[in-house]
Amino acid sequence: MSKNKTLGRPRKELGRPRKELVLPLGKFTVNDLIPLNPAIKCRLTLYTRVGELVSNRTVRSTGDVLAGKVGKPLDIFQRVSSYRAIKARKAAAKARKLAGVVVDLTPSAAPVTA
Image (cartoon, rainbow, N blue to C red; front, side, top):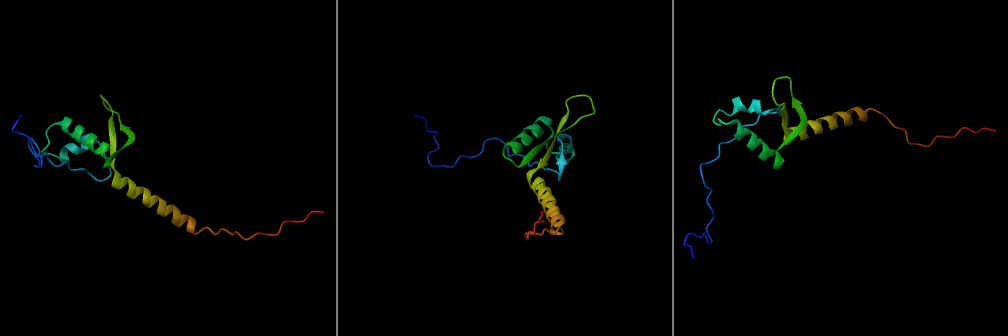
């Protein structure tokens, strides 16, 4: 039997510590992450980390793509917190707009035709 078992001991993370990924506010592409994260040299790391954030539901894909140049179009991403804030602002603006509309629900007399 191996003596290297971790019975009752917490498992330490292996390898070097992860570098923190900085995300911009609003919508962004992977190309926008490159100048914000100079410590991360590899583009594949950025794609992998954004994929993890999408699966954790911290970041969402908007479904739009940025095209116009040669190569594969870039997906556009957005923080979920920013998406929810924009959605709440739109709902509040719609509620303010509808608050000014007066709806009369009292029954009115129907016209009598003879």
